[in-house]
Image 1 (cartoon, rainbow, N blue to C red):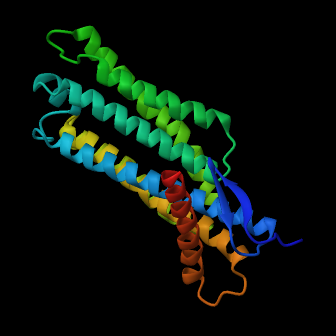
Image 2: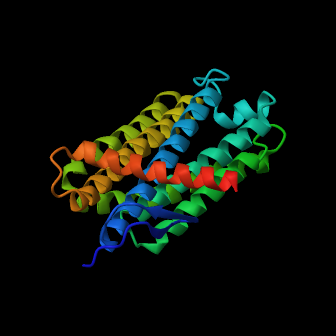
Length: 262
């Protein structure tokens, strides 16, 4: 494959950059992909960490061993906060799961529809004023919507976990362990204390932590695989990968500075 001349113009998303090294077209494609995947990983993990922190803080405003998330929102004047939490957490889970689908080239269309549907039901459940004494209908609506959220979330993620286990056999045991932690822990708290906040705190918290782990692992694996193609002669792969990101970030920074000056 022919090498490109020095100072080539390339497109990176909405950015157009000049590079000052000789490189093949194939390598440039890999570098662009590496930078996109690194940014996607940072975005996904930042959102998941924020959602996890939000979940813990919201779920412990009142005693989670006595009050569910909806009761914390509807009985203690935290209704708006409850809706914001549901929207942010639901959309974060949706964005993270779809990002992992795309990363692993998971093509089951139903899974995309299921995760979007799950988010919709979570938001609907938060909008219902679940006060049993005053609004019995909306309380049942909330319960049904929450149940459908869990159903569609499972329908979306479970087949993907099977797919990942087949594609990455080394993750098979880890995925099984996390499945037991998420479902086993949730069922344990439900049977022990009934439908209280700790059940929801465990369920959402463990799902978010699992998605954090999966995002870190799968994105890192993809970055390493792509980098091996690019850095065949590099003795220290870690330094080589970092140099790619540093050099490209410098190019982006220079481009941004030029825009400001002009």
